Image 1 (tube, rainbow, N blue to C red):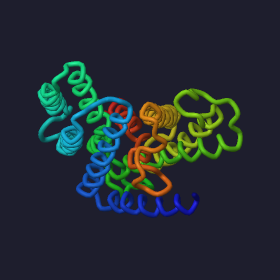
Image 2 (image 1 turned 60 degrees about the horizontal axis):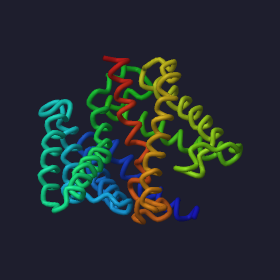
Image 3 (image 1 turned 90 degrees about the vertical axis):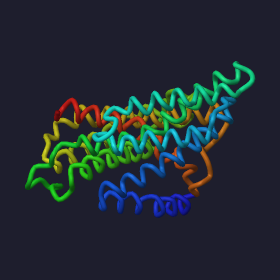
Length: 276
């Protein structure tokens, strides 16, 4: 298992790091591909849970929403227009189901699956909204987009790592075991602490007050945990252990990005509230 995880990390980390260093176009490519693959897994899980959908349309809808996020300042700042169009087209597609009791959940599940997976696009919106990094800051050689996406990535990874090791060592009392059997209060606290420390360090490197980590660290951690639990609920409903077997030792793409789906909009909201 450890060898499989090492292989998976070797596959996943270099593309992400390289894309972050190369900048916007490559970050967009990675996010679009990841969102498309995650959407495919979401619709497979929905089918396993008994919810019919227009899967291929839903995947295309997801990709469109993420591309809309990439072009947000030029075309559709809030993504509302494309969302409305996709909502209408999904309804039209559901009209083809002969039984309305089948068509209605098809409509709902298609829109839900596409919007859920498209939350990865908020990483691109975060990059667009990122405040400037003052000259002389430790991370001033990054663009604002690179710096703030790095904060998101490191804070979520810090939460996952802290929660795993603290939970494994000190975890006794569990919570929400009907969704996930392994979550403990000790792990939750350890993850929050780890995320807060990392956010403070990165904020300082970005030329911002590390005191902001007292707010941003815990809310990123809680959002990351909620994202993980949301995917666990979907997998539990589908009777699946992993979202797919695409990545050895790690399951599917959705298993790797579930925390970011909820954490990215939270970090964006913080940036808009604190620095705009």
